[in-house]
Amino acid sequence: MDVVRNYIGTLDIPRPSSRVEIVAAMRIIRYEFKAKAIKKRKVDHLVSVDGVRVYVCKWKKVHIVEIFNR
Image 1: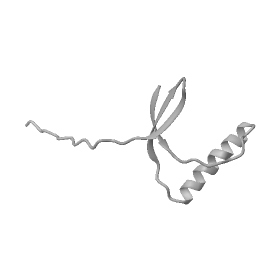
Image 2 (image 1 turned 180 degrees about the vertical axis):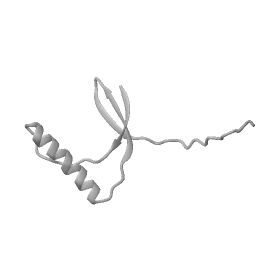
Image 3 (image 1 turned 45 degrees about the vertical axis):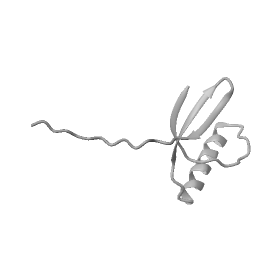
Image 4 (image 1 turned 135 degrees about the horizontal axis):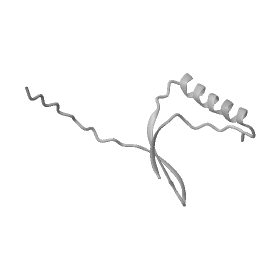
């Protein structure tokens, strides 16, 4: 499975044991990276039987030419 997503950031937090702690951890991560003004990056998640791999997408610039036939 190959999916492209926005990467917010990584932060060491204690292991959450309830849903409330998971939501609080997500808010902490979002707040820390918003406060530091770090931009979101496009990343590619590759999930396989070997594990999960996350790597930064390197997009080629594509120029679109609009042709008007009138």
